[in-house]
Length: 611
Image 1 (cartoon, helix red, strand yellow):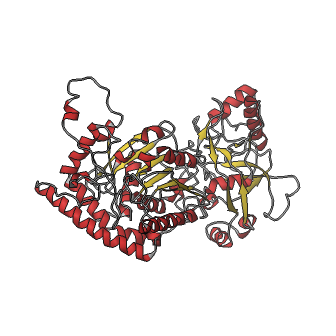
Image 2: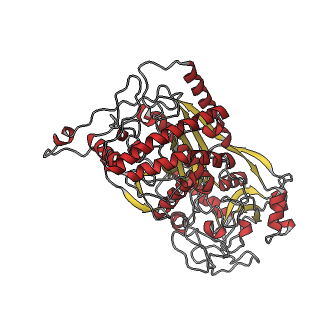
Image 3: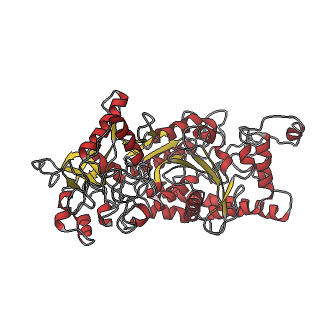
């Protein structure tokens, strides 16, 4: 059991450095630049976590998905001081202090991984940090991010497990040994807590072979002071460790709840679908500092072999999973091999990375290569038939079949009025011959156009009243700007793969019909389109893949996936609309229309072929 620098029964290797007041007083009165890690020596943003406590967040950079760091046991946000600034150069990244730790308020007891995950989720939303999130969990933090993913899967883009604790997947005898060791750790920490609370001298920690003596206050992280941090930060962390009783209470409860957490994870082992998982394995689990010579004790080597195998079992949780081995790192990869951690995070961004090819081009999102089951099961079709569909209306979703796709890019949003207007101006697009208003009866109203669809729109609303031919012309216009042939409409399979974003449920957010929280449809649209991006993105970072407007695909319609296209080639559109009921918001739902069809419920987004 790795808890941010210790495992029961194994001596960790922390080498404290004497921290003296002279390091700070020498700077008094001298104009010097603030240390790069100084932000962690003072509170960041204190955000309500939904249960009366406020969590201390440090969020920097911009972009999506947001990288969220979860620290190990007896660690908090400074654990990421060496890597957070680098990640902030290319996306948004948040570190935080769990309730009771660092600058965060105490939280309710007991401190289970479920409570920790729920508090983090509430704090992120209260801070306006919406998903999708790429979760990075170190040591005990791995339990917390796995729990977060179970409870909030639609908002999770992927996961990086940095030498995380796989105790729930270890052999039973190893688990029992870990739990016996945790009892000793709890006893030692309680003695420290009582000394801090009583204002008494802090007890010394158990002796470690070849290591200097250390007090209770020096046990946090991999040992305080930490050589990688500035004197200012070390001084503040030692001050907290010497005075904050609530921090000891929080860590005591976290350790006491570990068996409960592990039981929860066993009972809630859920697939991440095609969301990326990167498992970083050091073969130095529970080693805070590398020894001068490798530890070749047979018992230690067998322990590390079992940890490696247990961590490898996480690879079954995703079709896009890799185990990455460090070259020569302690459990703190962010200190010893930061590039390995950064590369793993960048690797997950192959999926969800946004880019624009030109100023007028829509923002595109890179989707990973993957395999998925296209269509719906008989059970899902039966569900739809009891929620408003006819049996015939969903028969074209069969047979369900496996599809493998290369990596490609898809527009993050439906093409907006503003984006389409740039195309219309440059191409001098003539006024079309009208647009329908509801698709139930296709009668062209010559007074309705993409500029005047019959209701008010903003420039951020999805463009409507656009035929399949006009959508293709827009893609050709983009290609002309790039002197290429990469932009196009998505295939039907690409669209469904993107809409599912690794899920296998009826809707991308789950099997429950919580449509109002995730999509615009007849029940909440107000009888018109709504600006793109107002509802949460799916795990691929794509917005409005369900609802708002139907979206053209490039493919001809077939009555089933096993039949040939009908004569005349009706074109497939997907996604549901502001005018239709919620059962149509399922990724498997198929519609078709003539390619010249225009309507106030019909829009599109473009795809892009990648090298």
